[in-house]
Image (cartoon, rainbow, N blue to C red; front, side, top):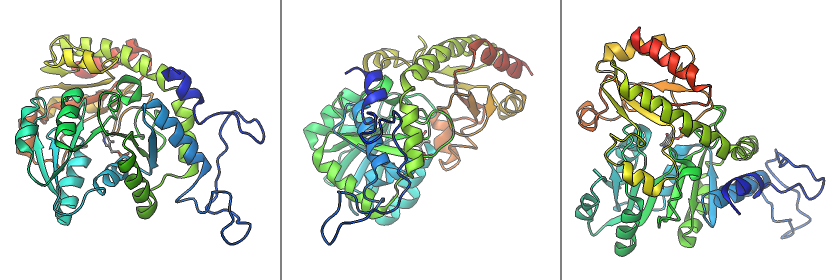
Length: 378
Ligand SMILES: *Cc1c(COP(=O)(O)O)cnc(C)c1O
């Protein structure tokens, strides 16, 4: 089956008992047993919930994975992935990632004696060079947040396979509609489902997908033993959203192409970062591993003052955290998503005080552009 068909139907077959075409919300914490050792496969909702199982089946299908596990947030999904390792283990991570991931790695997991090297993955030799005897995992994000830097997934998968290192990628920006890391050789893909998979800025969630049975067992155990599971209602919202993922992504990408082109030519914009622009140094790689270029666009306004002015002048576009919703969202990475990254590192990566990140929504693109133009000239 092709993408949209799987997204609409897998795990979302009509309910066996009633024929309901929308998966029922099993809002229950526990299940009646018929006696000692006799139940219907459902014991307690942290471990088993039919609505969550339907979602996990759906997510596995759209990411071309054998297993999927849903979590209560993107960060709890990332935390679960890292908890498959032990104290003393070393992780090679990308140097440009979501600020919260950097914070989890550098301020929490290091306290449990996990070791991290943050490397520029645009040159995969930096990964090979960083491998140590205790290295267990390569962790990346592509396109990255907020600089739209790409990692060559096929090349990194090769390194991981050759050196027996687990390869994991945060696929939030691309979504399974645009990029399937597992098909490209990665062990696991994870998502903040808060973003495009939810798509309506009305929930917080996460997911881990994998084809690696041993890793899947570990994640399943952590999901149950640590307990960061989503509620049945959140799972239901995500099942509903999955059904429109393909059409939303098509429109997101089309709007983003137009917006990126507009920004790149605007006299008040110093630089625009979008994998689909001819000026993006990794455009060929984007074409090679993604179906389209996504809908995240960052641009440098040149100064904090200009970014400030713009943040206060947009009306159609909402100034706020997060991304991936139907509405366009603008944010200021230096103060909102990446304050946990030291300023010297931020500047070296290009996360200047003038940088703004735009999640291009699916409003009429003429309205988005008129709003941006007015705010840039304000
Ligand atoms: C938002 C985000 C996360 C964290 O997800 P939450 O759902 O907020 O916990 C992780 N990675 C990326 C790329 C994100 O955008």
